[in-house]
Length: 182
Image (cartoon, rainbow, N blue to C red):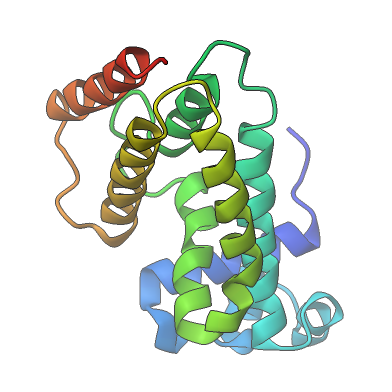
């Protein structure tokens, strides 16, 4: 497996600081220390905390766009890809790469709310695509909002469904997509 770039290591470290220690601990010094690089090495990529958060948001948007790149051609396939990119088939214990990516949302809200503009723009594009996915736009929007809420619950540790229920809820969402075909 290829070694992560310095920039990716810094973004991972920023997310880990945020998730482990909270927003008040998200400092350039803490990120450099967590990534094992000098502050100069950090400043080369991210001269300010806002640029670091912007990098986190940019990576989140890019990763999600990549997951949605080739959804298929059946009605509802883009929405199915949206669900798959957001909610795994089975619960995941602990924090993984997806959690580090989604920490960008928290960082953006807490550090630089204006830095969420790229994410807001992409969400508008994703919503437009979901509404034109060959199923009832109300069903597509309902599923998206449920998935986004589930994603937020996972990110914030707010009573995510336990195994068994996780699979049942996800299956019901997929059935809603299947039944929503126009």
